[in-house]
Image (cartoon, rainbow, N blue to C red; front, side, top):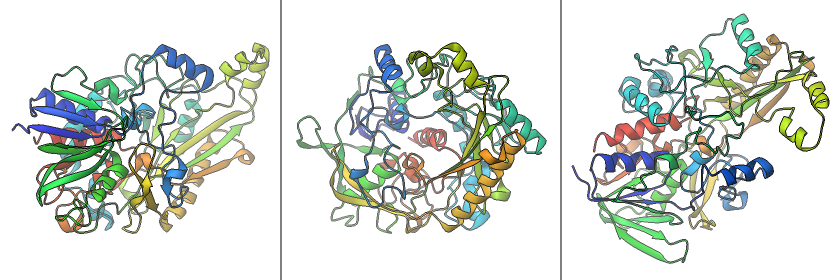
Length: 509
């Protein structure tokens, strides 16, 4: 099937995956990708040097800011979570790539909450394999929870960091299971520079690596926010309206199929902004689900310090290497599962800064053998509520998109889960030798980079926005490939699952 002219809204990993599937399979005569933000140069040594010396990256300034969010910006953290630039949020993505687990696809069947996915884990498993290859994921293929069905990772995992040692010993002493190397998008080019927010060598995946810029049938339009989809009939989109960010002028372009790959927030906002005679409440919103069921992860952390550090252990890398899924299990699904890593980025002893300030090696060595900080942090699975939602705010943001209005209240059950799981982290840190008096908890509200469910998948139109193939119910030529379609968030990062889902969707074209 040839789709003719195709529009892709969004240039992150989902949009890039859609573009390559269309072009490699000759499934479209012409592909135009729209991105609201500008091009941010990646893998440029000059930019890396600027980052090392000043902390600045080429995509600074492309994040949401609090004044562009209507509602309480602290209840659901949008500022700092997303990027409006070519490559999307993968430009500052940490690269964590755990899979969802089989029970995550059956949340309603298991707990009565939210919805089941229209397919099970086994149906997505081969696409997880392909996604891990696409994102150049490093991991331990010998671990088999969730099931790998014999598949290998494309890259071997980085070795455990030295500071993982005390935590590994504590996990074993406490009888906890299913811990090991964190699957992470770090390919063989990684030089462990410690500057992963801007990698000079492409050791950390970002979506610009796979943009088909040289393909003759592909066009990228940056600084071109899409503001509405125009319908030809109730079941068929005619094309889309967008702004030229350079001139401020609006334009319409006809397309035969539209893929919305704009994340959980912008995907829902685009549907809501596409009100017309056929869809007076917004495209796909006859049953009122667009923008509702907003949910993400709350983050908790526990930090403490040992009395001394005779081996001068310190954080070598700018990414975690140890994960634990001991509480990411079916028995904890009803209360909200928990996933954590050892994460000591932002080290207590900054060797590079010390050298730049002229401190002597002896001074820094003395600081290294003093108290050693250990930190564990992780995500709590939250459950969606129809009352947690986003809608269109007043006016437009600096990228030309409608402002975002969010109404969000963290579920009561999550507050109890936070206390329970931080106590468990404290127990692990104490077993690792941390002083009880040094323990400090951290609680953070959900962030928009892990937001899901605002255009959730459902078997019946009455229950959601898209079907199992991610097409908008009752609309033949609009497909959504973003976190927005997930019925639930599970306990782990969504990017790998989004990539796998997009690959599955594109196999249907």
